[in-house]
Image (cartoon, rainbow, N blue to C red; front, side, top):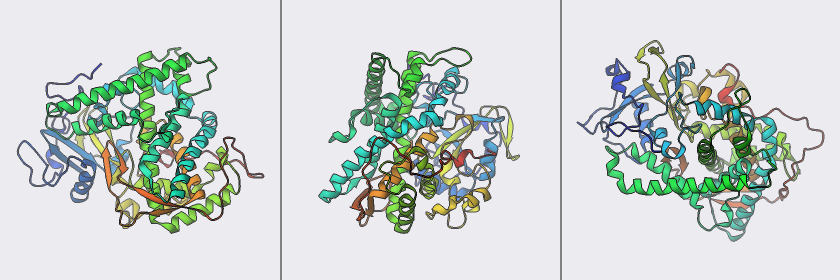
Length: 509
């Protein structure tokens, strides 16, 4: 069912900043506002996030922008963000960009409103699917998909062709979440064109973004028809996936879909409805691969541009994994420097670049800005991660040592937020971190990464961020890397390490 909208075409529950912020006039905004249009001079509807970063540097830790009659408040100062992390006073706000996805994802984990009961039900049922025991069962499937990627890249390397990094990372992460979550194979690496599911998914994400950049949805009537077709394709694909799983032999293998279909809430005995199962599957297929593919793509870009960092990371992989044909689950957690490379990439380009928070009751933000109940603000994660006061005068420079343990402990809490915050933070963050660290380790062990001459990083925005046009040349390492095997092994004599730790949710946060 389509999302209910107000007379102004906004999703129900949307509250303008004029109503929610009694002292809005104290919050700075860009100069040269235009009647009706607002703060559009020098802005591009294709890069609203990157435009906001420019305004943030100019206007400070809290500012506002107005476009087509809508006023938005942005926050990125660490003290303000830390206050917004207080779960007793603030909660997730399903902002316009996310609300625009509700026609396809409904009350799925990512798009549910706080008052909708299915969020807590689905979270409690699915949370064990991201614990250590479940993750260990996903690990060999991740290795199998990674082997398909390396075979694809080996052929490109042998032919002297560059690889399409964002395209191949999207194939990898789609196949990984499909295999581990739903026991499905999209055959992405065997296709000459991207899978129709990916085309439909990109279409819905792009349409949701475009809705935020036009004065009226009526201007997108043609795009709206295409979006309806994209949603219908996503629904058909997922319905077929669920039907195939229901008619299988019945020996559930612990995939996320098995949990959705077969698991009752441990306390209430309630189960997810068929409609909600569909919405959760779409949520995981979209969110479970779109952001991770971007994170891997940005990390590979930085590794290709910083051969000293790549050499150090590669040396760690060789030392920790040795000649083990297939790294075991615990061996991934030992790649601590590789993990720092990933964290630093997520710092500079968090693929989910913002999240919204709303006031549970009338309150004062950081003791200075009054907010009425329901008032909301957009936390600009990408700017929080570039604050010189937190990260130093070289905050724009790529440096994985920012995540050396002593440096992490020295920073205030709530200054690194690539997965959101609080109870509604990304449920799959450990899955994403394990997958991305494993894949980076495998690629570093196998290839030297050579950037294309003249390439300058361009970032495309479709609710998530992705490098645009990123291609790398590959040189197989002279010391042959061991072939992958689907059976993980441990190096003899090594003690198991703890699970990958998420610096977003370290102790005290």
